[in-house]
Image 1 (spheres, helix red, strand yellow):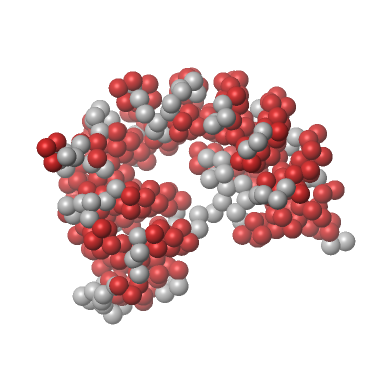
Image 2: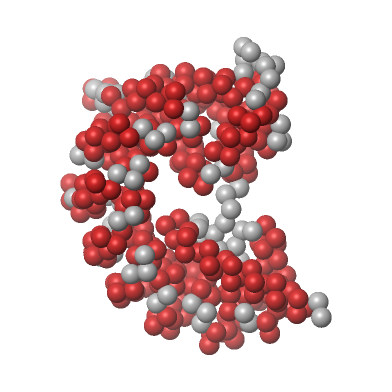
Amino acid sequence: MQFAFTYRLTALLLLVCVSAAALGQAPGAGDAVDRQEWEELRKRFNEPRAVNLLTGGMWTVTHAYESKQEVDEVLKPLLVLFNSFEKQDPALLDGVGGVRGFKERMAAFLNSHDDTVAGFAATMLGITGDKRYVPSIALLLEKKDPPEEDGKFHHAVTSRARAAAALSRLGAREYVPRFVRMLRSSNRYDRSGAAIALGELRAKEHAKDVAALLFNEEFSYGDDSPIYALSEMGVLEEYAGELAGMLRSEFKRETVEAAAYALASIGARQYAKDVALLLNDKFRRGDAAKALAVMGAVEYKGRIARLLDVNDSLDRSDALLALGILNAREYAPRIAGFLKDPSSVSNYAAVALVLMGEVRYARRCVPLVERAYNANIYLGADEFHPLVEGQLVKHRKRFAESFLRMKARLSR
């Protein structure tokens, strides 16, 4: 699925009730905005990786803030920027002093007393790609934990992690030693941010340190950042056995799902049996089915098809997608029965049949998936997992070609 940046950000900004009417004119308003610089900024904010950072940062700043006023203030220039992107008008950014004014406003919030606001500002500056802010962002790495008598706990500090991720976006490799030390922090956000940063910087010489987080019982919580990092470093194959071992973890749900998709992303069919064990877990069976499908584990088509009988529409939808990816045409008649389902399951049934090239169902499938096809939002990474984005490309191509054949058949 393509990232609908403007719509997602609109919803998030509305959530915290920041309105354009509340925005004042900044010093320097009316200055001309460099179109090329603005275009580069828009491009950077729409990159999938940037959107992930932005949405994660937005969740934190709107759920874990200490000062509502500070949150409102840091979001004001972002709303102006968003508005200029949505209306494709660089001049609208004049209200905050142009591109440079936007960055300077964000830089000012690095000194916020609200830790989440400071971390959010670091994230925004990291996305801009402006290396001039590296020293200012790096100061957050030295931020001290609040004293316990204040009623705060050290794990509440998130700005160090946000700063690490921002610095990696800016290519600041000189901080790699600092990130490695953060992997040993008692603060889980530090460890996660450091892993992400080392992955972004492709610091595979520290892959072993990152992988160690997966099995460190002292840090036994669900976190998939080490797996993302290993993927970015290009060393998943070296740790495939460890990833398969993670699948047996009872409590680390996010880590288990990421491990399954990571194995699928490298086509590690020798571990398909380990992923297939998750088909017995009602909380993980849908992702297990899709991971097996991306892996090409056709021997599990029958097991996956059993999920069509479960009383959970999400699992049925996952099973339909998986069977479509696996081109399990022997189940086409059964899948066609779901085209009449009043829920969204019908759409997934149509997608599966299109993937299979089942033109006999064209008249029923085309109307169900045409809108998704035209908007280019089918077989999205969010329906599977970002780790298998690369593997989904060929299936999207197959879907598009099959859909066009179906549509041509209807026009005869």
